[in-house]
Image (cartoon, rainbow, N blue to C red; front, side):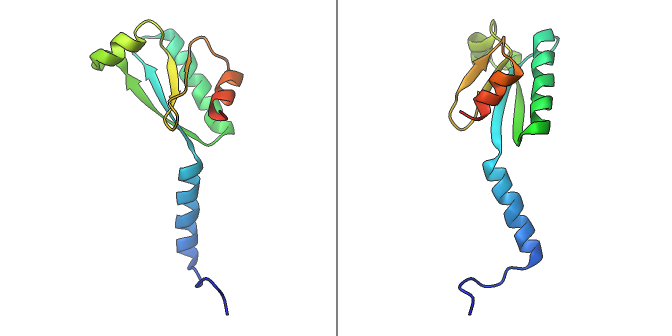
Length: 102
C-alpha cells in the first residue's frame, strides 16, 4: 500500500511548474527609456535568463517620484525581490550571477 495517493500525470506537471516558479529567482530592474546603459544591462539579463531560472520586471523610474529620487543617478539597478539585495551599474555578468546566488 502506497503512503501517498497516486498523482495523475497532469497534476505532476502542475506541481513541477509550481516548484520551478518557487525556485526561480525574481528580480526588479530599475530603468528608464533612452538609457544606453540600461539597454546593456537588459541584454545581460537576457543572457543570464538563458543560463539560469530568473524572471524580472522592468520598473520605469520616471513614472514614480520616489523611484526617480532614489535611482535617478544610479540606474540601471537590479534588485532581488526576495531579499532586496541590489546591484548598481557598472556590473558584469559574473556580478549578476553572484547576485542571484546570494
